[in-house]
Image 1 (cartoon, each protein chain N blue to C red):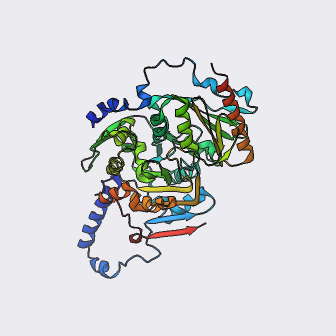
Image 2 (cartoon, rainbow over the protein chains, first blue to last red):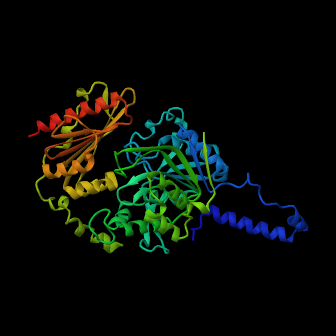
Image 3 (tube, rainbow over the protein chains, first blue to last red):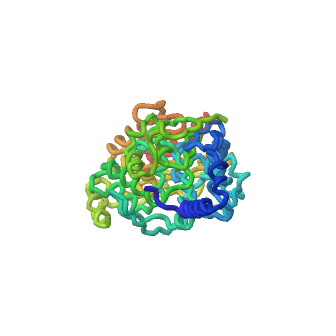
Length: 314
Length: 169
């Protein structure tokens, strides 16, 4: 079951109140005849894949197709962005233009604060040709505090608690921005794996060493289960995956042979996003253990023929 | 979980990196192997280099450390150089416990791919990065594009590092 977020609770409460009002209204007849199912053009896709030469433009379009930033960020919101950007090698971190596009849209949407939940590698923003023109965007960022809090995970099968950045709980909106890349251990690193960026080193060490098998990747089942369990702590409101240029070997750090799909993928569901994204590495979702484990936690749909996918080119 | 973490140190003892921790450390910092700014016209160090010893390499490069630690890793220095046009080149110097360790990790990093180039004892140039080994060292240099100019600088910097390794006491 998806954990309750601040936003989802408020939405549900509003719907419940609205439903009560509607049933009591003298206009209930209108409810029977006037309300219509949304048209096909109004139904938003579950996942959008935008292909094009410009990662910045692709990202803007992907957000637009999911309903626009207003579907995720309201005026005054504090937004936390978890960007996979700690590694300096090309294709090992999210293209900074993708991150910049998301951050810029959040500010346009009226976000009061943008918290960068995991410190990027030095020189990250200088890699973007847009870094100069978006200097004001960068100035608005607040970086991680470095403080962690212990979070209980009662539904966890292997991970029962974790030390997670305190900043995550100071955000009204949480956006997960990952890169679709190779990983030596779990084969694929995407949105689910990106959540490890929230954790203290000691917690992440438990993912790798918790069963005392020798080697950082010696117990992939435990590692994968821990990643799935970690994803119980908070559901991202929006997930973006950078599939523009990515390492296809020697992940997570690189350098290695690069793949290029010139695509940015967006979804509100990280399981579906990873199921879609792993295919850029030539993998099927069933081959990536954490995707199946996260799906069994009820965190999302991994069978892509069961979701609405929109693919377009710009 | 706490018990597992407390046993973490016990597990570490099985790695050659950790078991070798009692040997006397070289006194000189690895940064003496890095090209000086005076050696590189128009290039400057971008921030302070980062260093790691033993198991702390995991904190720096996460899962990328696994192979190094397995093969016998001692310490590393990582730096980025930047020129006036904003071009960047990353330099990672890994000191292994033996020349055999360095050769093994080189094989894993470079394999038999890439264009062979004459640096150190063995070297290979790929689309945007270069690996070489010399003595106990395995070195990786990487850029952010595949332009000829970038590859030329990778090679030039690699030769400088290799030359300094040869000059080490």
